[in-house]
Length: 356
Image (cartoon, rainbow, N blue to C red; front, side):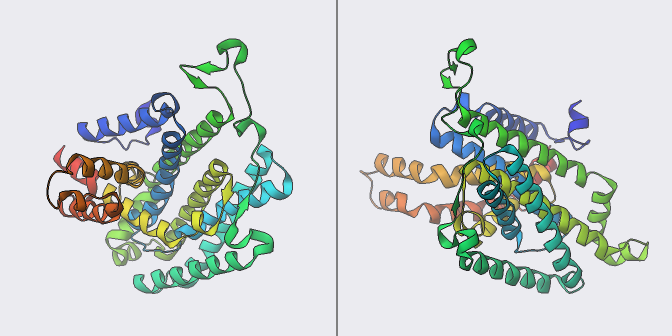
């Protein structure tokens, strides 16, 4: 059963299997294991970024395609849900229409970019995607009448996903293990289940014949072309699939935040974060997206607090409290990234699989 769900792609390492199991259990039971607004928000972001990073790894790790337009597709999905919910009402049908429309637009745009650009060298394709993504970000900021401009759009999700919605009053007195049974809990599981389904779908894609051909093209595109595979078609198809998956991740993000804006869904900082997560977790391994996204999001949310506590504990020592000052958390995040690349050149998952 598990092998079928994972499309035959087993962890192949006991430590990796344990790490993935712990992450899955923690995310599945996050509202009950770690009650609190911030911790549940962190868990939801991890779920969403796992899908986003996995969709990018389909391009970079499996297809060998470097793109800087991934946040553009992510943003298209987010804005699709926001616009549909704003103009069609606060129903699940609006979310579905917005998500499907966003994924369709993202795939179509990826198709256009791919057909015109994937025949050129990799670095030129990367530059073209960067230019298109920058242009779209500027366009979204300027079309304030439609997108809300720099202020973004705040919208209403279905009542069942809002904190005011209560359920289970008769059976559980409105609480389960001390956790309030409300719409926010349902919203978290909406995100968790959606992310799980998307991740398993991407895992199926990379372990299908299509995924194996994509890896063969990555290793030697001339040889793949020589034995009869249309390299450009496979790369364009991978770009479209990756864009659609990123857009659906953006749709989940919009549902969770109930807000979209250029900074939350189209920022170049998000693109850099995605690259870091892929490298930390391990390129060409879907499980790398799980490990990389989890570690990175946790570091983003809690490293500053940990450094603040460490600075206080070492206050009697010379120099160390200044180095561990909470304001320098980005510096130490960079140091951790450099160390991870140095000690895990194939990513954490690659290293664990090789050692296992």
